[in-house]
Length: 275
Ligand code: A3P
Image 1 (cartoon, rainbow, N blue to C red):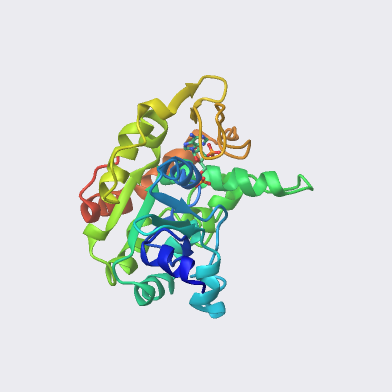
Image 2: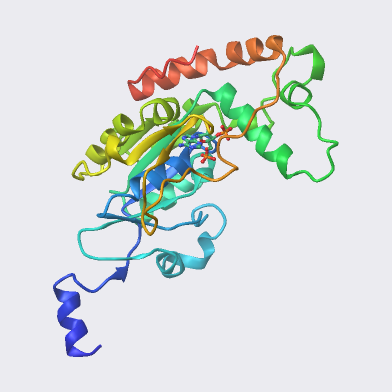
């Protein structure tokens, strides 16, 4: 380009689109949107606004396509993207590794039972005809009996975190992954964001001052953000009311997940406290 732009680029002052340095790879319905919105308050972070789905759906489009989905950044700024389905996509670990083996990976996790109900609630809300089967009918092979857990049903399968993590650990060391507690992101967003900023090597810019607890919504909301100076919460689709689930179904699911949760705690070295 013109000498002026070449100069600016050399100085790192001319924004260019780059492949991501860090990815929020999952887990769906655990608070991934909240995490992305919170971290992009940081001036040294730029993130793609919507889910790009490169490593699962659009991989054949190639890295140039992917790079063009990223926001322009200045040198030193971190480029990020979040697509929660990456965590459960078999091919994603090798593909991310091929792009850049030093990519930092963030995983938000939430009690798999609540996560499954949240997942179901989202699917149900999209159904125009309200003839959707109940959660219990879908989560168990024998429906209302609440006996055998239907492990082939997506909302159940996604919650077996240990199994999905195993595949990532074949390509990435544990130290390159950060596990964010979806529960703590709600009760103490600033503390969880301190961990995130440490992990990304960023100064602690996102702090208590950015959050306030909105009692009506029942979630932390933002005092201000990029382009908006007024307080606001995440959209209506984040923080939905969940349907009532039979206690026997909840108990059975907790029992089902218990060994997988323990395995996940061992693998990550973190006790997330899901009972
Ligand atoms: P529910 O709507 O079931 O409560 P994701 O963004 O990964 O799809 O996750 C959605 C979930 O993020 C919501 O699930 C909600 O519990 C959680 N969440 C965490 N922090 C939130 C916040 N500050 N505002 C709204 N939802 C938040």
